[in-house]
Length: 187
Image (cartoon, rainbow, N blue to C red; front, side):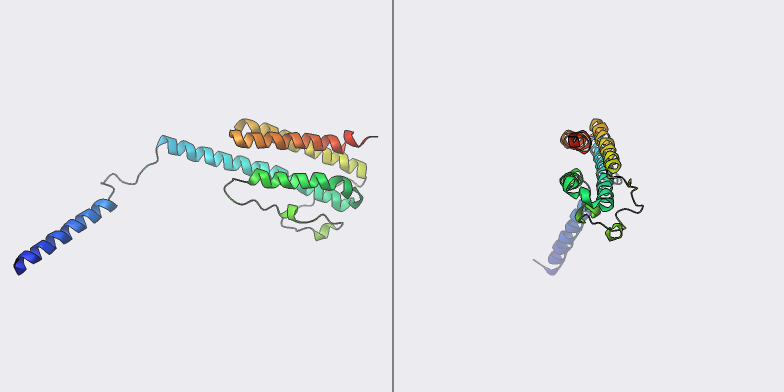
């Protein structure tokens, strides 16, 4: 092979390589790839589920803040409220699992204390009002449980099947909590 032949062969090989490289990176002049209808629907469903999870977690966190406020105002209720509060803490965690981001219940990790100033202020910007009478505070907490339970039950219609089952369970638990806070305590 002569020098000219080698050069021609190398030039042809380089041209073929460049053509192959351009072919791999080019979109063929069609512009950017557009998602299909199925991809758009899947994305819409994922956004809707993420929003539903965020709302459900917010409801559960609000309830947890109410428990913390009642426990801070009435530390004598701790033996009665601690198991229910632990359950609500578990609901916050469960409702947020599988979502778009980690759920870190700030109030859930703090142990109930007798002083509202010991509460992290980032978790609850405005203090939750609590009745001075322990019985009234329990009734208000039961009402908050009912409201949260109804909110979770209402969200069932928009939830995907697995999350709907979880919401139903949390809603039922909230109804039981409301009963225990009112009727279940009567002698």
